[in-house]
Length: 151
Image 1 (cartoon, rainbow, N blue to C red):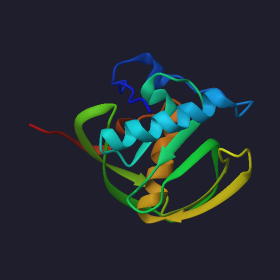
Image 2: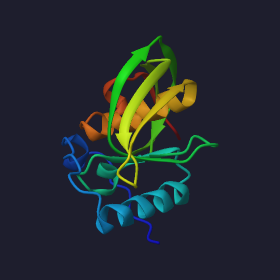
Image 3: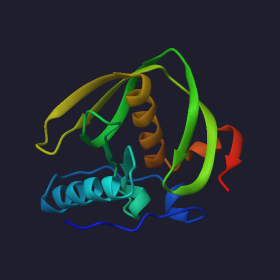
Image 4: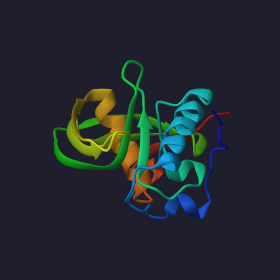
């Protein structure tokens, strides 16, 4: 497949709300495959379509043990609180502490146009929230405290 270039700040596409996917067609399936390859190429744990310049509500995630493709994901439940260090492929060399829900339930479509619900906690919950934020034009630096730059 193909590996895309990662869009970085201050590109305005990162601040634009992505559009819902209305039809899961060959183009969306190719996008999913290429996003997977791009995420792995850059050693990411998640990637949202706006990060490659595509304004569609599509994310891929793999925190190390569970690859997922989610189309039109939405958080339908959240509880608890975790604070942890985050970075982002679209904000290279910057890290910060971000407060997120400890547990989430996400509803989305998979590549087969089936509705799925994912219950997640810990790292997977954090990654899902981070990537869904991208779909709404929100970056982790908008929520982070103690921002630091790598030298």
